Amino acid sequence: MIASQAARTRELKTLAKAQARELEKGQKAWGKLAGQTFNCQAAKEQAPAQFNQKLKYHRVEADAVPILPYARRGRPTAKDQKAIMGFNLQGELSGAAAKLAEAQQSLGRFIIATNEMDNTRLSAQAMLESYKDQGVSVERGFRFLKDPLFFAHSLFLKKPERVIAMLMIMGLSLLIYSVAERK
Image (cartoon, rainbow, N blue to C red; front, side, top):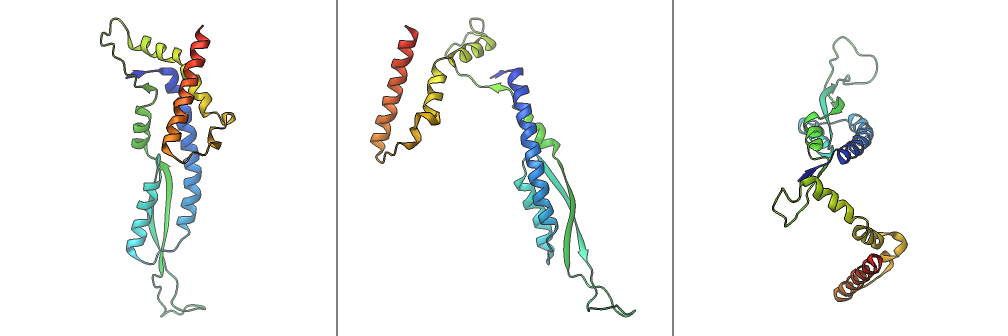
């Protein structure tokens, strides 16, 4: 496992954007949920728990507020009493520090496997640089296969044997291309 500070700062920016997006969507969804009227005790307790399960980086702390209208229409008399007709939820969306810390813990780390067991011959940083140098040719070739301009998505093969054969031909063409590029 190798840690890279440059990758960590890049991934922290991505995480901040994802948090902001989730906060915006969560506030809209919480507004809709808070506007609903819950008639039973179980539903008013279960709704915030289900809402929190959908959120990855945030949490809502909700309180149930009873709706207390008078039993009949018009101006109430002194004898009229309020009755609980349902419950509304009130609360606020806030960041979950534990979930955020857990998400930040693994940022900027790479897992690279090698058969070189001697750390003195090849350090972790040298291994990372060696891997990134491969991106010049090998990784670029596979990125070419995924490119929409390659039209790989428009190939409609039904039999698994034909799909395997097509992948073999694409891999072989990448091999020939990299050999020609090396010469």
